Each structure stands twice: as C-alpha cells, then as structure tokens.
Length: 437
Image 1 (cartoon, rainbow, N blue to C red):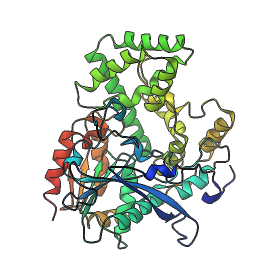
Image 2: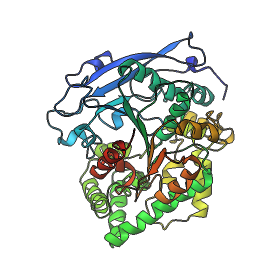
Image 3: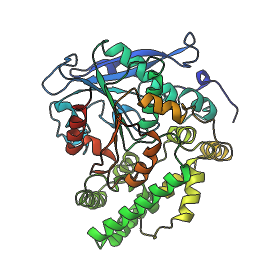
C-alpha cells in the first residue's frame, strides 16, 4: 500500500435533497479535512437535529443529547433511517428497534454522519481499489470525528445552553477524544454517558476473548431456550444452499445474539430464522447485509487503527478462534470476519496487505490526561447484560482506569448492546442526569 494523503482518497457524491425534511433540522457544517491544517481543504459534516415529541427542534426546554453512534464506519442512519416515517413510528420500514423511542420523550437528539462513512459527510468510495488504509486512518480516525462533533455542537447549540452526550459502542472512542478536547477549552457537556462502549487502552486480546466467550454463552442460552435450535439452524443453512448461497453466511446473524432482554431476544432470533425460510434470494442477501453479514471495509480499517493497533480483525480472530472453540452449529462472528476480502481480488490483496502491516494507530490522550478530562465532567458508564459486543463483566474491569471519585458512576442495564436506548436505559439516564450539578 502506497501512503496517500486523505484528500487523494476516492469520495462518493452526496444527494443535496437530503436536507429537505419536514420534522428534522438538517444541514452541513464545514470542517477541515485535516484538523491540524485548519486552513487546508474542508469537508461538509452532515447533521440531523430531531425534536422531542410534540416539540420543535429549537425548543431549549428539551435539552439536546448528542448521540455518538457506534461502528466504526457506520453513518447515523443506522440509528434512525433518513426516511424514518414520523407519521407512523411503528411502521415496519422504520426497523424493529427505534433507538430514540424513549429518549425523545424528554430530549432532542443531535446526530452526525461520521466522516467517510456511507452517509453524507464526505463518504469514501470503499469499492474503489484506490483506497489507502494509511490515509483513511490518518484522516478519518476517532480524533478527527471528535473534532467534527465539536464543530457541529458549536454551530447548533447556543452558548449557555447545556447538552448531554451519549457515546455508544465505538462512539466511546470518539467520546473519550471529545472529553480530552475539553481540557483545551472545548464546550463541555453537562454529562456524558459511555454506553457499552469501546475504550482506549484496553487489553486487545483479553477484550476480544471476552467478546467471543460472551457470544458462545449466548449461543448456549439460545439452545437452552430452544433445544431444537440446531435443527432450525441446519434448516436455514440447507435453504441458503438451495438458493445458491453460502450456507455459512448464516453466521452473519451474530448481531442478533443477545439483542434485547433475556427471554425476548431468543424468541426474536427464532422468529428471524422462520422468516428467512420464506424469503427470496434477494431478500436473504439484503437480510445478511442488514445484519452484519458482510464485512464493512471502512470498519476493518478503522477497527485496526482505533481498537487493535498493530493487529487487524482477522489476525485477532485467528487467535481467538483457536483459544475459544465453538461447536459446529453455533453462530460465529469470526467466520464473518475471516471473509473480509469478499472473494474480490483487489479487496483480498488490500486486506492481506493490512494484515501484514496494519495502519497507524489513532493518537489518544494518555490515561492520565483522560482522567483529568473526566474530572471536569459528569460521566455515567452503562455496561449491559447479554451484550454480544462489549460483555458487561469485561467492560466493568476495564473501567477501573477511568473512575474518578465524585465524577463517575456505573449503572448496569438489562437489554444487550442497545440497552441505553430501551425504557430502563432512559430511566437510568434521567435519574443520573438529575444528580448532576
């Protein structure tokens, strides 16, 4: 891979009609492509300000929550579709999980398309062989994204008006970088929630083993709830094969493991299997894409630079597969990870080259610097039970280095990886927010 500058990357065009919306306030804020060169080229950062129920997007009686979404490599439309049907919130096209169903009862929501993702903020064309991992890691890291969020906050939220941040999943990396900016005078949130989030300075192998072990446990819990699940999975595999698809692509359903409270997610998983048996090939392929069935190549690059410096998802997966073996019937995220090349020649070469020489790591503030930033803010950490991505016990252990007496709290929630967006998560948020000065 020849190192290029971020400006040399191939970008996709965006649709200006995206700004037209009857409910949300939408717009762009220009930000430097390289924040170290504020006078250099700029890119547009797309935002969406969603009003609280029965209110307006500019109503200060409903404070703003800036939601930093997970990923990396995912736009904010994964949390609320651009074409969300506000007239009929329960419409099936809105998706099974309305992430803001409860938060909008009390607050406005500010979303941002993270730069480079398949949204409106300078989306990188990850299907172009001209992409360069080093250039992506340098220009589209969580550090750059944190500065983009600051630019949007300074533009959208009037000075003197307080706001909160929820940094969920990968968003925790961006949230920590944002906190470090407050040491230099950036706008402080009234409080920030790190929900089932990634955090800097984790033991990469230990965190990866905990994730794989948790998913193994969830597979076993699924079999305990539905003893015939092996036969059900075998039937779906056979159906995929009959459609001319790889039967092992069923592993893409790993994102559904633990998705919701215990006793509910298992039922939803089985219902999903039953639905697949009645789908056409095109519907099954879309289902796979919607449920993490394909490796997001931008995610692959940014995961390496943010989560696993010196490693990639595939090099880590090879190690954890050996250390935590699965039974043949189990849904296995690592199988999906190992297909990162997608069978496309240039993409296979790109991923293999990355595995041999991972891109530069994202520069994070030191643990001491992050603790100093936390000491200026109110912070709530919310680990979640049944979390297939950030296991609660592992997450709690990793929090020790960030706890600051009088500034940090930990609240364990039910409901899996998206617990902060469920009813009990909203209740926990309100109770914590009421304690902030």
